[in-house]
Image 1 (tube, rainbow, N blue to C red):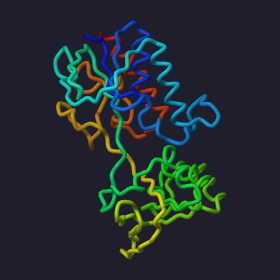
Image 2: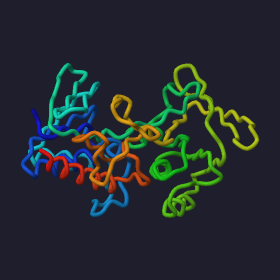
Image 3: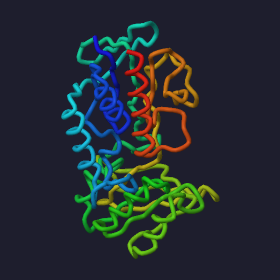
Image 4: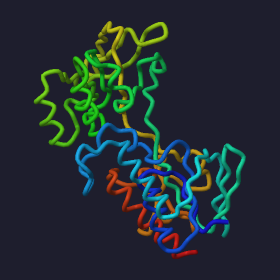
Length: 298
């Protein structure tokens, strides 16, 4: 029996764990893959207060892990498949066949990258990660799907590696922050394809030909590029499918000012919540509040 179980070890989950542990509570973090969540996979971390110079997602995640373990937080790498939220005792079951119980539960397992739902999306060379796969495309052409902050930040990173970076965005122009727009125009090897969608990828086992559709005219364009890489940053889908006891809003979890859900003793924090701004900074705040409030209930 734990005082607090936290599902997810991203910034929100680790923040909640550290604050809960600091209040003398027995805390368990269950993480499917690795500490850091989505932020651990990015090429660079920007704008977060007091980050180190040239901070990467990997270095940021590593320090998060070290901090949690140093505080005495227990982390288990198991995939949660079932939860029981109602009642005084919360129950969590994992794919590994283990079952855990706690007085309070914090849902902080964020979201997963949105699929495009197009033919050929699973071919080799598609849905790549800039930080992990970027160096393999040195001197080659790459395509970044998405025009928001996350996509453009990764495009800027890839521009230092690839021969040419094409940013494909459905909007009329990039919808990222001004800082990133200003940096884009300083790179001669970045091209923007506005009001356009990637609608198909063709090839035997790997991507060889890309189909783009102009969202204004409906005109299709086929681009043959056998050695290209396609990096998709088209938003996230909240990982809330297993929380059937909760009423969701657009797939996200509604919470109150204490980060508590409609079920007493069940909290949510980070990107999984209904909120206007999804940044590392806001996830950490959510986690801190949830951890403190959950500890107060134990």
